[in-house]
Length: 438
Image (tube, rainbow, N blue to C red; front, top):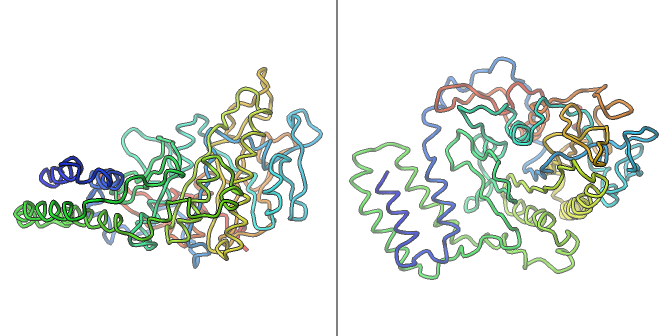
């Protein structure tokens, strides 16, 4: 193992051989650190039903997921669950949408034109009211524990189905959120490729000295022969496989998916100039080339102060990127196979505080799903007239995640054991909300 890690270090640092391929090398190095963590967990025991987990499964209605995460706690009262005639509503007004009877915030006028493709879930509830914990349970379905890190949905999709593009990672995260759980207890091969700035894409991915790199790879292979022979274990072989995967990625013609300059200027403008909008465009380009799960984050929703200044600004960015994405996917015939999810870690208080802001509120909040087999123009669940309590069709966070997994045709009751031999399922004991599907 040390020899292989040394070979990687040599590849990264030796005489600049990877100076123009350092992005791929860093991704490879991250992946190598966790190879083999799954061990022998995929045994016959793993296929037993985990008590309390849903046994429901359907033929997948979605092949891909574009997961738009509103980091900080999006106000349900000012976006998807707008109230009228009560003090808690504040100045935010609802507007009509393309779906009869469905109304959303006036701050989302372009998205309103696409609600005939979408389902709003206005009855989400959580018991996690702090950012890190709320973010964690939303991504993993499990409460945060100091002894284990649970996988995010994209990692589960990789383990259960794989597929996608053989030369690109199947799980990509676009944004700067360091709290993302990634692969959790799975091998780091299942972790997302992190892209901090969509406009930069994967910088310096191409190697300008292929002959020198090939020579170094051959040398590493020669040095490792005795090690591989002595320790003929599949996890050792996995290291060599990771080198091959990184090399394939560096040579892939599909790397152009990360180059947004290939898009027409009017298309790029439609998504908005902000990183979120360009991230949505990158997500479309990646899904188009077989990447199965792309997450794009938009921060700034932690509106303890000046909520009615900050939310319209955040909504303008969301509205432009989301509406352009939905329009683009629909025109390309991709929306029916792509589940677009908009969610957050919790809502904001109905009561407006002394700073004209809204505080953390996990008791009731909203999420939206478009395409991927969900009903169009549908609202699931309901809060009371002030937005305080869920009064119809409560959806817990694991239920919401089970619904995403159900759309992908993933097994909700299949157990996988962590390296510590503890059993886990994809959405804990979450039950899919089947009524949201057409």
